[in-house]
Length: 142
Figure (cartoon, rainbow, N blue to C red):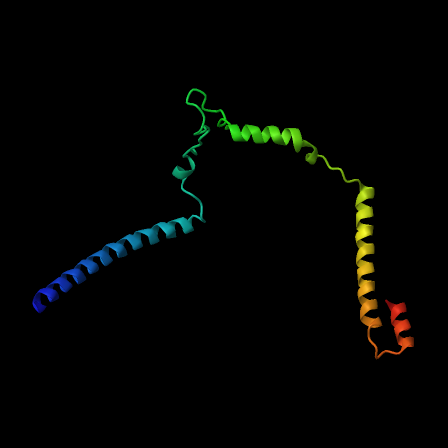
């Protein structure tokens, strides 16, 4: 039994060594190709530049009689397009004017200042340890 296992292992080692020799030869060939490529300054071979690119101008979803047509729309897509055209077309236009933008920014600034003041007033005014003079000074600062 042990002799059979030993022979099987020897055969697998010999097979692996044979594959390693073939791989080393393949590696040397690729190394030569790479060295030749780098020797040309990274330029491609002339034969690969002459090959035309394959383009697929035909839609896979179009009928065979008219290969350049776009795919047909299904009923849901048609209904969605009609809905957008009828009800959502107005959303494409901009309704905000420059004056309204400025008014919005001013309102936001005023609101933020008011909230900051109320917060500071609540915080400083609720401290019972502060004397009234300091509260008034804090009120003026806020």
